[in-house]
Image (cartoon, rainbow, N blue to C red; front, side):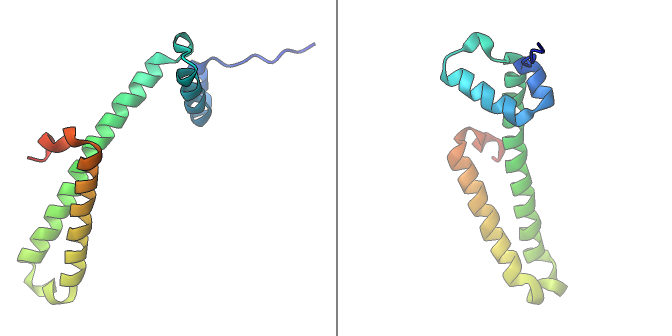
Length: 110
């Protein structure tokens, strides 16, 4: 008789990330806190925080690039002005939505 060895949540993290994620969510919902792969969960949460900061930084850089193009790039203005203005509106909207979801990111843009 061959028994299948169930992977621990720590090895599951390395072998099947999506299954690890679903398992971790289910463990937390069931309040099985001692079963949670805490080290990898903390690492993922920290990564999420860094990703949010990088997202707002990237949007700000794109916004500034397009504002500068609109202000300074005379040769291309007539052909691209509509596109640049559309991009500026889009980046401003994305920044606003990001800050609405995560208002604690505001100090990173001021």
